[in-house]
Amino acid sequence: MSSLHQKFSKTYDKNLKGIYRFIYFKVNSEQIAEDLCSETFLRAWQAFNRDRNHFDREIENPRAFLYQIARNLVIDHYKQKDRTRTANIDDVVLTDQSPSPEERAAISSDADNVKLAMQDLKQEYQDLIIWRHIEGLSCKEIAKITNSSHGATRAKLHRALTALKEKVEEA
Amino acid sequence: MQEKDLIKNLKSLKQIEPKKEWVSLTKQEILGKEERIPVLTFIFNHKPAFASATLFSFMVVTLVLSYNALPGDTLFPVRKTTERVELMARLEKAQDLVIAQRRIEDLKRAQERAERNMEPVVAEVRTTISEIARVAKDPEATQQVIDMDREIKSLGVSYDSQEVEELYKREVEAELERLKETSLTEEQEEQLEKAIELQENQEYAEAYEIVLKIGY
Image (cartoon, rainbow over all chains, first blue to last red; front, side, top):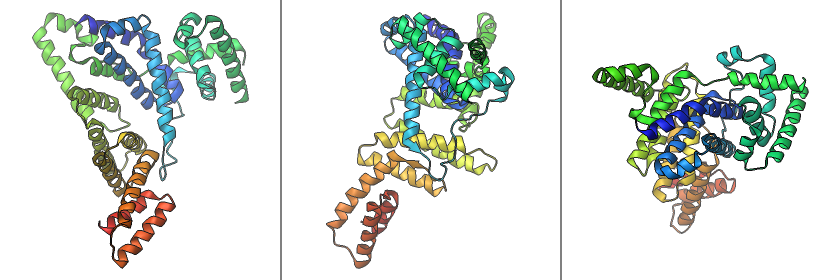
């Protein structure tokens, strides 16, 4: 295996689950999460092959690079969804709101309520909560991904958590 | 719910993970032949010939199974990735049209299975057709997209796509302009009036069908 493959393989192993969860919590569908997650890594791999030096610079923080791709793909997904609506099949719900059997076994009903409440938050708050409280990223790393200051990130994170708490209580 | 409980519940969501089978297959598809799965590492290091045969068999089985996967099946993401990689490698200009045609074939196959959940199949068709409709600029590509849309509707599947609608609008406008300048029989004139009325009501696909019937 070439060093290129080894390097990307490690990046894949280390980040796959986090990227999958990040997408899953936003689209709430296993199938769509799988599609967008594989597309995220495929694009990263293409970037890696296209310009290795460029990738090395970007991959100074590979996690941030992958989250940026994933975030853009989720935005594109929702744009696409807004553009295309069904007529006769307009009642088709593309996102499966109910937890899968595996998921049901893994998380409590309280946690499931929190997951559902998170769907009602604005995208920016969702991102911050997923990164900080589910994936355990530091405020410093989140600030790097969002290209904002450490202080601003902490303040937004606090507001995001307060908003989530309100949503959970409303539910 | 207290903040500490909220955070505890959030942390527990980390237990949600993708399917292991999908994780390893997707990695294989992205990285290609050089990637090895851990369980085969020992074999690769000690029995190269056997390992090659094993890997080859594994890949063939996976690809064959995924080739027949339909939207909603576990192996469908593998098939989608394979198609993207394969077509990008070929630098095929009409790759999106090829993929769209495959999604229509999927739709036909899915309809043959009575118990099949059609939702993901139709969603894939709609997404793919809308995407190619969005980028279709030249008359040939426009015609191909419209033909595909008509084929889908002939299968009894109806869906709404602004992008496809836009193509019909464009085609109908051009055709009606041309027909207005053409000598028509009385019957054709009646059809033309009807098509113009439909166009005014923004029912472009229906107007297109009538324009086709006029026969010019």
